[in-house]
Image 1 (cartoon, one colour):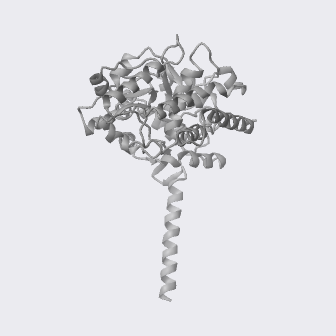
Image 2 (image 1 turned 60 degrees about the vertical axis):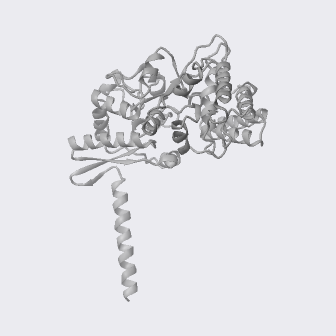
Image 3 (image 1 turned 90 degrees about the horizontal axis):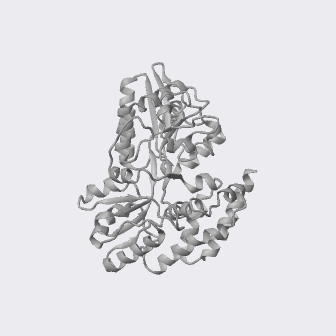
Length: 421
């Protein structure tokens, strides 16, 4: 009998817990005095998370009747949001992570009438605004990705930051020679296929989009000849064969990157724009820089790769839309915009303030360089990021040739395009 009573008590307790969790995540009032607004973000960097949490606390202090429930699902974010889309049960506020229009468009509230829209950075308009004027999300910050490099090391070795792909390869060769095996010219955390996805995605823009011979039309209408993509796989394999990449490339992990850069053991990283403050914390003597993507075609101009980094969209069917918008109004104040930009070491998405971060001198130096949107978000069907990264792993493991990489990409491209029809 005691055992039975104990079982019933445990079951009752678990029921209470589950009911409480469901109530807190419903988007309705958790109690008569508090309105719950669920917020889902792709933020994974600890400094970024702390910045967002601090802003939420300030808002809740000014609005004690509103409770912002933050969720940071990390790698599980996309899967979780796909399930929620299928059930039409989206978070009240959620990060569109580059897919504001193309993936989440039908689920988001139009924000065009909000006061902050007049301050939206023009560089983000093609990402967050459509031809009808609908505004899909609020930009917490914006990405300007290129190549991150060890400025201390390049200065020591007498290397100028490259502006062309050929100069980039020459810089890698020089680092290999002068580093005498102690420095990896170009480092990848290749245990995560996204590292290769980043390489292919960022270099696809100078290869296929910004040059005189561009393939925008063919990529968008499904007629693209994927042999034009093989150059990038060829060069990645060439760099690997010449030992310009880390020997442990297929097992190296992201958490190693900061330590190695702080020890002056890495020359370049593709992307990696948020790395600077963490490296400085470990070793203030090592300074990092960022440059736009080097050009591949003669006569082309370097470009940043980017658009939105972190955003917040309002679910159009949310029962707490007004409270969600109130939070967006709060974070669009100049002092909060500045706090988020500086706390995340990225340019702000609005033009109503000036902020300084680790890379400010580089963003100012290259202020006139155009920002091109992430290649896969505009020119590839949803789902291509996975094969883009996986083919890189297979290429360097020896199970695929460069031509087979392009063939696999073509197969996935056509398969996913067909699913959209």
